[in-house]
Amino acid sequence: AQKVTQAQTEISVVEKEDVTLDCVYETRDTTYYLFWYKQPPSGELVFLIRRNSFDEQNEISGRYSWNFQKSTSSFNFTITASQVVDSAVYFCAVTSGSARQLTFGSGTQLTVLP
Amino acid sequence: SAVISQKPSRDICQRGTSLTIQCQVDSQVTMMFWYRQQPGQSLTLIATANQGSEATYESGFVIDKFPISRPNLTFSTLTVSNMSPEDSSIYLCSVGGQGRETQYFGPGTRLLVL
Image (cartoon, rainbow over all chains, first blue to last red; front, side, top):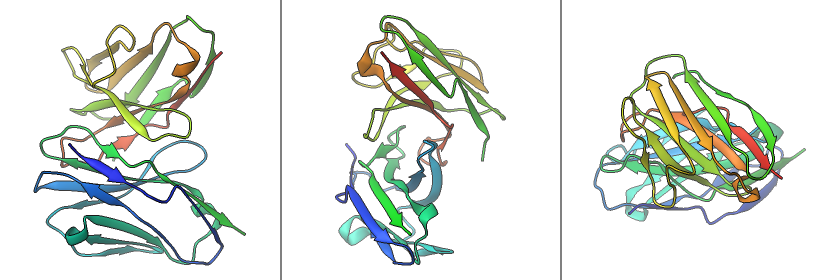
């Protein structure tokens, strides 16, 4: 069975602050894939990143960065210099070769105030 | 990534009626999935839509309530039958998966049942 825990239900920051969204996952598979998705108020789910279990390199894309640590089963997401347009619900998810479905965390509502 | 469209984008329905949601992809895909997102909740997989055979339903979802069609590799429908207010949710289709590919999501159908 797989499980994703996003302990932060809601986070509120002021524009230009940095913010980190936490994600802790559980899976019995040695090969698995981790994802982050963004869901703005319009409702669509926007893919942000995929990381496989063999690649622990951190990744940076513009203001976004991701910290994958297998030792703590965490895949945290940091937004640098946050902007109002970053306000959304962010979901972390996991899947593995033995499972078809994505298992989502409960999501973190991020509000960036001007 | 594939371009995915859903119809309708939103609807308000009466208790006891049925609604069919369409999902169209701009390219042939092997895997298509249907998810439900209840208000303020995370995403839950309803079923995998298999081309040429019956859909594979997850625990808690049954074919009589959520019949699915997959007539070809670019199209699928999900019907929400005999609706009740508890069916008020966002319904999303996605493509990809199998543990390697990223799942991309359609824009979703917002359903309100009165």
